[in-house]
Image (tube, rainbow, N blue to C red; front, side, top):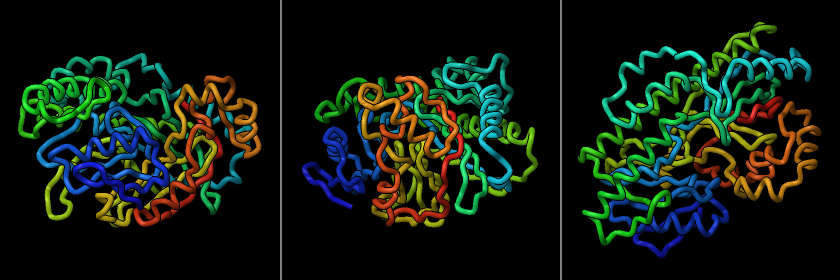
Length: 388
């Protein structure tokens, strides 16, 4: 762990060499008058909107919409099955992944019919939520795009696991934009002397006791519930698709967020901890840290390190942007990597390179960098992958 000075509070980094832009964003956050103790950078850190992805900030009496980000509730679910790899071959895996594609809407696809969920009736009376409710009835249980994925994996004993990465669809994006705009207006009136940036790159904030701050938290918490339910429903579909030709039991499940803010107590103070692309790692708490496409993923148990506000990374972290990946990675080489490992995958054209393994940091180095934050419980290898 390295400490960077040059701001009101230090920045503590578990990232070996944080990119200059991400470090600058972290130093900007550390200058905010209400930020508590220090700012943390996890080993998968890279630049985000306003706050780095892989960043952790504790705030006193304030919430930063861009400290959570545009995919509120983005997170992971992993399920261990009683299946052994002897029960499947490559053809079986291809058939299973084909069925999953038929059952789980991916990318811009939504359910044609409205999905029923009691949570919709409990939606808070917040305008941005009410505007999105109709479309959300069709988005619940859909994967979305970007770096979201579904994988079948195996552990060291050849047990098969199912893993899925998804978020809150349009809810997260619309809530983030609405309340970042509200925060910018608030700061321009009440905190003119505080540098909070502009537009998408702002670190503008709202008081927790303000109407806008309370609305943001209500909307954010609803999006978290939506994202959690969405992952559960997709995982049920995955389990059903695998179960069409194979009999097995579910032995373990972990379902977590890695984009959210929550009131927690650290260093004797109650603070709003923002985890943007970061996983809660309280002592004994189970978490999921996925690798990039074609690399290992990990089931971990938190060590409760107070210096990271009891957090660890949320994945491998990008080492290049999507555009750079498409422009610079070699398609044939990335396909060969996956084929040589025997992984069923969907890399076919240059546009698929935005999520290729070469676009991401080395997950094993990321794990080494946070040995004091989380303990590895299970190491998983991919067998088949669907990228959104």
